[in-house]
Length: 267
Ligand code: 13P
Image (cartoon, rainbow, N blue to C red; front, top):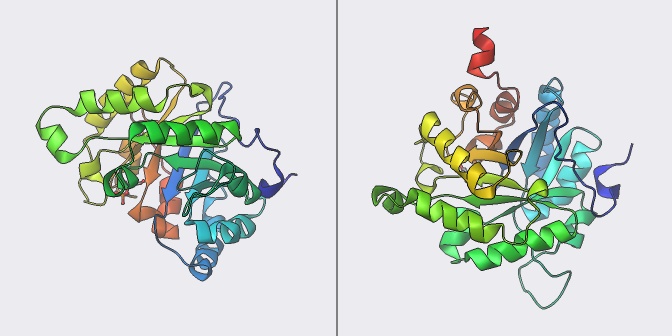
């Protein structure tokens, strides 16, 4: 078996679903976890996800400093690795940035682009986010393109307009068959306020229409927890989750990966 770090460029993950719908359960650790903490986390986490159905990709996005540790500690397990960002050039004078070949060397398969935090704190525009997504794909990484409205945009009834712009500009020139989109309403991130499942589902359906692909994998993110995952994953247009705070606890995140959609439990 080829280990994550030995995958050739351009063939990291197969997003095609075959007859079974693919699901992505991703944990974004943001600026948390030293290497020692990450190692302890993985030791605790791996035995808990052994029975997760095979059509679910379990993905962890550690900070850059812990990528190597997490890749080594997860070995040939089913955990896939995401970076939290990527630059579009292979190398160059871009202080603080990281390139797709550098990430690939560490066994990275996915990369988060357009998260609301860099959009907000560093004013990252859609054009830059689009460059990142295209650069990632050029090296076989699958971008997880984040979109979402702020609270004030929501209150001004601008949700659809804002997300449509983020989607359309974000995917320009991007191969949508190798793309994941994460709908993360900003007002739901780290606040404990989850978007009502029906509303999240409605927005995800709109995103699917705007992308123009029935097969695009769309995640929901924003205060996902063990207590609400089963309801979220029962929604027809939600194909997974991007989890922040709750992914820092290996027990809770394993419960999220082992979700039981409500419709299925009712049978
Ligand atoms: P929380 O799950 O902490 O709300 O964060 C969501 C997020 O930003 C994932 O990228």
